[in-house]
Every structure is written in structure tokens, then in C-alpha cells.
Image 1 (cartoon, rainbow, N blue to C red):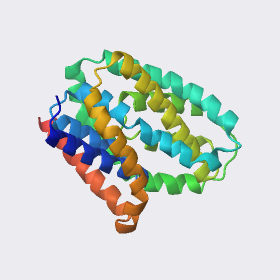
Image 2: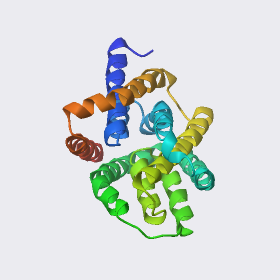
Image 3: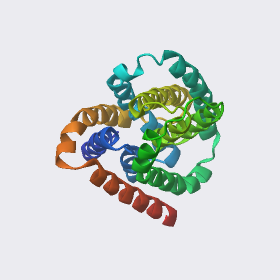
Image 4: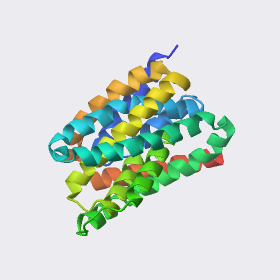
Length: 249
């Protein structure tokens, strides 16, 4: 039975995670450590977090409806590749021994933090690239991105944007729209797999999911008070601090 103080703590974490995802990405670096802080085992925290943040990815796709027009074939083909990667990543997580995952978590959190740190550079790098054509290597990249995203949600969006930006060479907003679709696909596969076979703590999901959705809607208002670059820096420092504490533990 979850206590009232824990409900308030998780609701706050979910609200902040949703706002961070809307502004800079990296909301997992808020909600995942919050679940760990309440004593949830690392794998339980990871699968619960993945399920709880699903509504935010749906909201992202709905927000990019205009940019997705005319990209149906591209999004469909890449989504099929992302599904395969997500199945592999979800299966790998469910088969990973708890102690092994515990040892990997600090490195995963650190990677997600650093990926968030270089996100602005990646956006500028891809926005100015005018090459044409699509390499078949994009399917390898999307598969690996889907695999990573299903295994550990943190940094998935940044990784997928890096892959798509390298190979699609389109308007950044259209590329980001496809990224949002692939993130939703990977998240959906994860939710199905973890709901059926994973140790999801549904009482935590019931608190974090609506809070993260509300946080996403409030993200634009927060942007007026705190520049995204500042927020990104705070989350990166927080994430690296969490990674260090987890490694020492």
C-alpha cells in the first residue's frame, strides 16, 4: 500500500518529468531516480517508469500532426524497424539479472545525461545538413535506438534524433516529428511487454502517468520562467549526480 507522502513525492516527480520532457527531454532522469528513492528495485523502477511515461509520448505525436503529414511511408517503414528493436530491448531487460542491471544503471543514467547535454549541438548539426538520399544504415540505427529505448528509456529521444538527423536530411521539425512517432512506437511495445511480463508497480503508474501528462501541458508555461538551456543544465547535473551516487552505492 502506497502512503500519502509517497503519492505526493511521485506526483511531484511525474509532474516535473513531464515538464522536462516537453522542454528539453530527459524526464526519465527525474522519475526513475524518484522510484529508486522509494525503494523500488532497479528493474521494477525501470519498467514502471517506462509504462508511466507513455502518455507523454502520445502527446508528443499529437503535437506533431502537421509535420507528420506527407511522411506516412517513411514513418511506417521506420516504425516497423523500431518495433523489432523494441522487442529485442524489452526481452533483453526482462532477461537481465537484477544484480547485472544494478551495475549497469549508473552508466545508463550517465549516458542519458551526457546525451541530453549534447542535444543542442546535435540539433544545430542536423539542421544545417542539406545532403539528399537515405542510407540503409538508418534501419540499423533505428533498430539499435529502439533496442536501447526499450531497455532503458532515458536518452531514447536524443539517440533517435541523432540517427534520423544523420540519414534523413530533411527539415528539423519534420525529422523531430518522425522521432516523436518512433519514440511512441518503442514506448508502446515496452508498455505491452512490461505489462504482460514485467514487475510493473501499477500503484506508482497511477500516480506518475497523469502527473507527467499534466507536466507536459504545463511545460510551455514553465519555459517562460526558465530557459530550456538552463533547465537542461540542471537536469544534466542532477543526472550525473544520481549516476555517481548509484555507482558509489
